[in-house]
Picture (tube, rainbow, N blue to C red):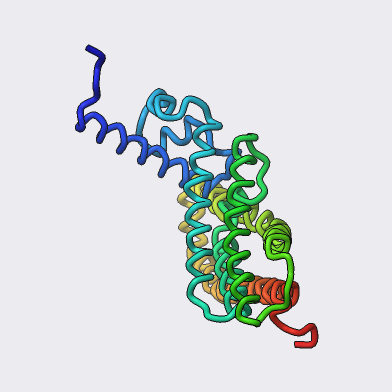
Length: 265
């Protein structure tokens, strides 16, 4: 008789696949597809590389699975936002604020989903999910036309155009954000190495003989650190304002494109 897996074996294999998939999602969120190696995923999941290959015969299969899971989450959030608003103008604002806001808060993952060069299997999945986003927008636009809120138009063309325009507008900021996300870690590592090297090389006698000036220098540095903190907060506030401005521009563009608001509004 052919071997049949028991329910316990099936449950164990399913749990192992889920753990590997979750690990791959975490790796892509940190490093993008380029850093999503089988070895990196295996380390994150706490399994052997052979276990990863047992569930995903090739890296292309693994990243395609990651793309499907992550993209479905975004499509679901997009659809929920569209369903919560009553008017077409409000619905367009809600879906863009949801989509762009989520993307800008997680730029590395969003860039991977939207534009990072990757295996053709993922490119094919991108087309599938672009159509899913367009279908949500087409439904929203169609309801707006039926309610007399929007002028007659080709619903499918308008929806596809919005998906393309919004995605393209976000690629640049997401690419910058994805690159920036690794910089603090590199800077922290460099600071640790410099501090450790300085600590190791300082003779104890020299440190004792210059103890008072050192403390004075430390006290003098306090305002500098405070200034650094203020600069960081100012930079963060400016970054948040820029993101809010981008989202507002995308909303206005989309609403005008489908006739939800007048050009003079």
